[in-house]
Length: 131
Image (cartoon, rainbow, N blue to C red; front, top):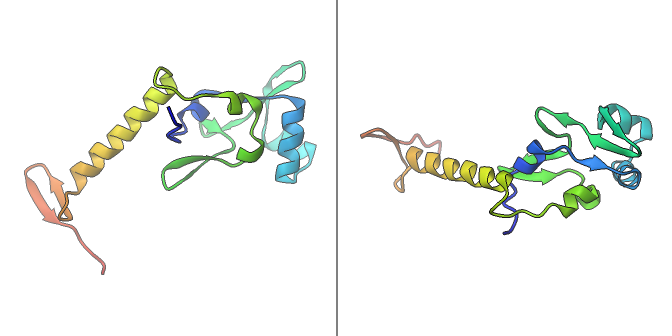
């Protein structure tokens, strides 16, 4: 299964980083180690040399959206745990992403039909156009 770029995995999991991941991310972002510690390191968990990337507003600090699609702000240097993640139909995160996408499609179909009319129950209203 190809990734649908729903971003659910980036909200359900907190990516762990190894020292070499941190070095690559710091270089990519052109920040200092201190900036990393303040902005992206989650100080609540530390195991040997492993760290967690902080979640902000319920998602990985590096998760961004563009036109409804999830993007990783550090994709070229993302941590190994993220690179190793394989989407699949049996994964709960992917199932949730598919449900969300289906709801969006259903909602879009409910709001507009092929003629551009907004549907509201049994009543149709002509969509307002600024052209």
